[in-house]
Length: 351
Image 1 (cartoon, rainbow, N blue to C red):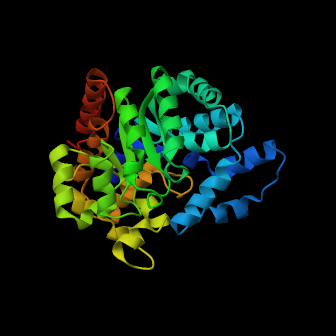
Image 2: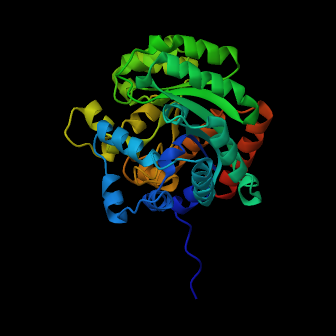
């Protein structure tokens, strides 16, 4: 009679509580759900063709996919359906806390009722099965290429809905379209209203984009920021101020951001700078960005960091803990989540 096999590191890491700080709700829409919503709105889509369209290789391709896919989010009920499915996925992956980004700039462009959409999302997440197992706060995101006036509209909505769980104001889209300094007014307003500040930077842009996000906009976390690896003084600044990079490896492969950074036609995830950031003590967290569109998951993200990037289980535990440490949470809530994280990590033999 043989004894039970020892649990693998991958299995133990999967059981570890996690926080996800960089994930777009709209990017969680699977091809199947997109086809379902399209059918609801009277359009029949071939699921295989939808799946093929999800296989992006460049950032412009991804932006077109995002624009097309989100065009089927046409009512509060559609957003509620997506929120329900997303929460279920996060819970299945042992995500205990998430800060989920909503593309409010896109909602406004389509003349949707943002407050009605958001109310429907919150109601969907009130289901006991969700509420008892997953804590979510929200980031209202402006689209850089839409300009500073539109960004200010998003910042005002974020401030108005703070009491409903909006914790931060962010800026996504094409970071090379307009300079960060153009958005200083919106960010100053967000700060005056007590909102945290985030910026997508150093994804397709260079190190200067990250520095500008910090110096002009007061960014407290950087979405992606992989270009920082090319600037030692910038990395020193990130370390000194403890500004984390929200690293999303599979996203960087699928958008061509990693290939651009490395100066190659096609990048491999093995060449991602995450291990170098960790070795340099640059604060990092791990996330999925748009998991359905990049055909990934939180579990796979951690697994690839171990199997393809060579990070040890101990290093990945440190990164997972950073997800809670860098969350925009009151001190008491953060302590509760961190205490639970450490208790489970010890029980799994990971600490």
